[in-house]
Length: 484
Image 1: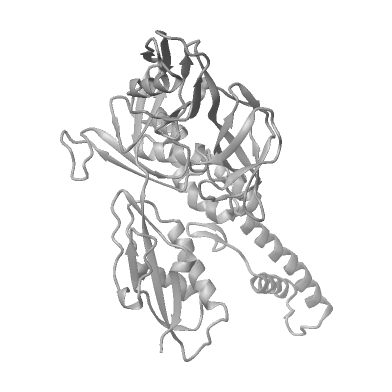
Image 2: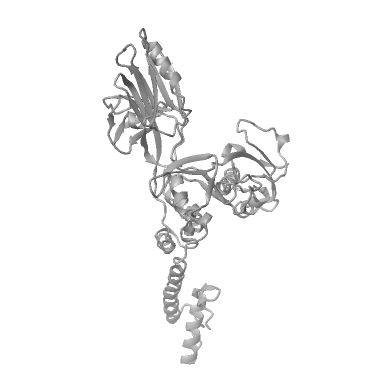
């Protein structure tokens, strides 16, 4: 078997010097003359030129070989290679914010309507589809009495449940509203009276509800959820109550605000990110349920950062409180409803879902089905990287930023339930940053992000993470110091 080409250990190419030696050997044997005697001869120039082109062909063949495999291909070749696993590079996407829009009942907000933050500079968002804000899908409603009639029944139906109040012969507007407030006992709603208006608010800001009013009641305004997309791609995080300015005037649109989490966008997935995600996503075809769910969630739901799955296949509640014969998915990011649909589509029949987040979706026959999963609780980790310089090589001037970037990149790949062992970072730091003789990485961690630990709080320790937690950090929580 040849020592070159595709071998059992991979591809081995002929280098320029090997090709030149083989050509000279063949010519010297055929002509009976040592063709290497004069390096500047016309013949040696020709051999060098032709050997160089042959070496380029070997290198081209090596590139073709490596372009066939996801963990060595790059760019378009990587896109082609991962198609065999049913996986594709994730395109750049904008960030979507579900906006609570207060409107006159029945207002249509056209696609392309713009709103913006009240920050400077402002960030604009565009309505992603035509949306009608109506009492048929409201999150917050202001109701007033259209006419006060003695001894009249005033009724409000919420999600099919009827609530009513009968006024007395001398009823006032305030008494009727107070009576309706007391009559609505469903805990899914927060009800109050302010002035001459009855306020009905969804206890869960992520949900909308159906409302039907009697003929003697009407709406002052209703607030529905309208999805707006950022003007540019990428993950844009904003605190609640920041998006409040209306750019495009729409008749009937009174106010806007962001009260619930975003659906995170992303930039075009890099080659490194594609390779890291490939192994998880190819499990879309797996027969193992947890792997299939994880793959489907990562592949089909925008904004998912991390996924971990656990199963209790015993007949008793396990040590983590999971019910018998259930699965628990711990998912960071993504829309609740979309996540629930992916879990429902991939889980086996008869297997329960476990978690504190509950989403009701339609089943196979349209019946309501409750899907449960958990969101990870964050454990905030601080790193104090103590570097001792080597006496043989200097540190690069960007060693601080490079060290932080290495830690940040590694932490970004940590899934829920994975503990942090600082020593595992050492290899990457030693390999990528020259001039280091010794590294120590004491850490501190807490569930309270407002705590700023003193230097004495940092110790050499493993950061223990439970199945429902995820370790996170940020650049401001990483300190790089020169020891001594």
